[in-house]
Each structure stands twice: as structure tokens, then as C-alpha cells.
Amino acid sequence: MVFASLFFVCFFFVIWLLVYNGMSTIRGKNIVLLTFSMIFYAWGGAQYLLLLVGMTFVAWFCARKIELHRDATLRIVFFISACVILIGLLCIFKYTGFLAEGFQFLFGVPKKIPEIVLPIGISFYTFQLLSYVVDVYRGEVEAQKSFWVLLLYASLFHQCVAGPIVRYSTVAMELEHRRARMSEVAEGAWRFSAGLAKKAILANGCALVADTFLPMEGAALGHMPVLAIWVGILAYTLQIYLDFSAYSDMAIGMGLMVGLHYQENFNYPYIAGSVQEFWRRWHISLSSFFRDYVYIPLGGSRNGELKTIRNLLIVWALTGLWHGAAWNYVLWGLYFFCFLVMERAWKRHNFQLPFVARNIYTLLVVAFGWVLFRFTDLSNVGITVKGMFGLNGNGISNLESKIFFQNHCFLLLVSAIGSTPFMAMLRKQFRHVGRVWEGRLGRVFYMAGALIPLALIILSVMALVGNSYNPFLYFQF
Image (cartoon, rainbow, N blue to C red; front, side, top):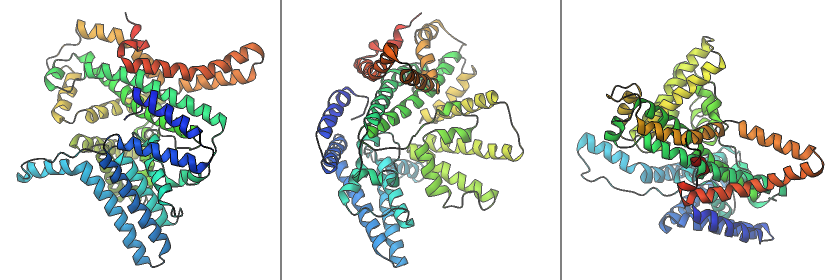
């Protein structure tokens, strides 16, 4: 089950809100939230629900033992046991096939690559449970006495699809003591509806362009004109941001509706002036996880330049692997590692460009990176890069691609604007006018602010029914 589906929007989400708000106590609300989270996870297979419960029990049991024992050796034993079990299970489900392919290539065994289905959200709840165990071991949070409360934390269906990775310390108090203010419920409704529209209308529309101009089949890709490939890269660059950030918007919005405050996960990364700044703005919860639980424990930048580069290499290799079990993801992580090391050297020599030049450089680096991210078949990466410069024997353009682009250029323009702070600033101004202006005009602004989320949900549902209902596809030339 995914957020941007008719079943979730029209049934699961609505029923959850009705039942949740029908409860008068926080205990009743937690039971409802946990029950619906269990149903959400079980939707993809009941056996994976058992995996989630089992991993949560390991984290709960070991964290309790870490807190209760004063003997340093026993604390370390329980800490290492929890980390090994949690990381080990993640590796079994996510990387067994990848490792088997490597052994098969090198040694000819195994003869058959095992096919293991990846459980929904395992990357996210594994990292959440790991951060919880580490924080308990460090003495930064108290171990949760109730297994069911920790299971609620690990299983919150709001953020299991695409984040953010929620630290236990962020929501520890709110899990057992929270109250949703009406202003936050309204803000949550706005965030959810805006995220849904971002996904159903903009991201899915950009995906259509990207799939047309950057097909996954090498033969079709090799015949794409130069301009079509560049437009395809642009569309995929917009799609991947709109897609990921939309799910985070929906998660944050649903959290606000019930009094849970999740960390912001994206901060308009495409306005960054460097690759380093891009990663401070992109998937913030993941970047901060690797910073706090890998980079800094390894020594960070405290032990000289060579060890700093070593630490960065480890972090970015792991970042690539976290995104997927394939070599293109590893190369994607190492690709960004190279630019981050290069920018460190530039910074030492006080090398600085105007912001516009730095932003263009960042966008080009990121866009090339998304080419690596898109194709698990690395030969297609080569075909794409050659095609960008006409080295596949492909022409500059053709009539078919020109017409398709003209029919979707307005969608791409709106998606590009939606990837900047422009709409957020416009909404802020809109709300300011609604508060300040008195009389009928002020009431109109308030009414519009209440109706816009509903309108966005209606448009999103129409878009989910079929692309022919996407309002931006009617602006054709």
C-alpha cells in the first residue's frame, strides 16, 4: 500500500482519521494508530509484519538490558548483539541477491541467485531502531519500558514508505503525551494534500516524460535525440525530488494531524550552491543519521585530512548501498564523494564563484548523478552520456520528441517552480494577507486557505484515476 493510491486516500486514510479522532484518551489513540500501522505493514505480507515485531523486540530487549546493567562488558555485549541482529537482518533481506551475484561472477557459485522480496520500510525502521539502541547506550535517552510503545514508534505508517527517519528522541514524549492543536491539524492537512498533489500530479507527470525520453531499454535509449535525452534528465531530476519530498510532506502532515512532529526532510535542495549544501538540504534525516552514527564516531574531520577522506569514503559508500543493492548505487555514492572531496580542496584555497555559477554547477553535478541512480544496467549509463553529446549517431531533435515536449513543457515548468521556495513564500504571503486584512476580503482569503487542500486532494484523486485528468496536460500547444 502506498500513500498515492486511491485505496489509501479514499479508504484507509479516511477511516483511520475517523476512528482515531473517535478516541478520547491517548491510550485509545495509540491503540488505533498501532493497529492501523500493523494493517499497513501486513498489506504487503503478514510474514513481514512478524519481521518488524521481531526486530523491534530485539531492540527493546537489548536496550532495556543496556540500561539496567552497570557492568560495561554486559552493556557492550547487548549493544553489539542488537546492532549485529538488526543490521544482519537488513543485509539478508536487502543484499543477499547482490552479494550472491558478486560471488557468482567471481567464483561461479551459487548457480541460482536467490530472490528475496524486500519488506516494506525495512531500511527506515532498521535505522530508527539502530538509532534508538545507540542513543540508549550513549545515555542520551531512557530505554522505553513498554514494548508496545516502542513498536508504535518503529511501525508508524506515516513515514515507513520514504521517510523521514524519525529519531526516538524526537517523538519519545509525544508517543505517550501529545495533543494536536487545531492550527497544527490544519497545517497537517495542508502538508498532506500538497504532498499528495506533488506526487500524483507533478511527480507522476514528470515520470511520464522521463520514461518516454529516458527509456530503460538500451536499444530505444540509443536512438533518442540529444535534446530528448536532456529533457528526459531534467524530467527525472524533477521527478525524483518531487516524489521523495512528496512522501515526506505527506508523512509530516499526517504526523501533525495527530500531534507528532517529524523532522523536515527536504529543504529545496535544487537551490543549493554546492554539492555539500545540496546534501544538507536533501534527505536531511538520512544525512544526519550517517553523520551522527557513522561519520562522527569514525573521527569525523578531527584527525587529519587523510582520515577525514577515509571517513567520507565509508559514509558515501554506505549511502549508495542504502539506496539500493546494485553497483550503480554504489557508484552514485562514490560519485558524490569525489565532488565533496574536491569542494573541500576548493574551500581550503578560498576558491569561490558567483552564486548563479555555483548553482548551475551543482544542478549539473546532481543531474549527472541521477543518470547513475536511474540505470542499474551500467551500459545504459554509457549510452545516455554518449547520447547527451550526439555520440550515438542520434540527431539533435525529431518531430515526435518536439511535439511530446511541447505538450508537456507547462508541466515541467510548474514542476520546476514547485521545486523552489516560490510556492511556500506565496502561501506565506497569502496567509499574512488573510490575517491582516479585515472585512469580506480577509474572510475570502481564510476560506480559500481552507478549501485549497480539499481542491488539491480532489485533483490528486482525479490524477490517480488516469493521466488524462492531470490538469497540466491540458496546456498543450
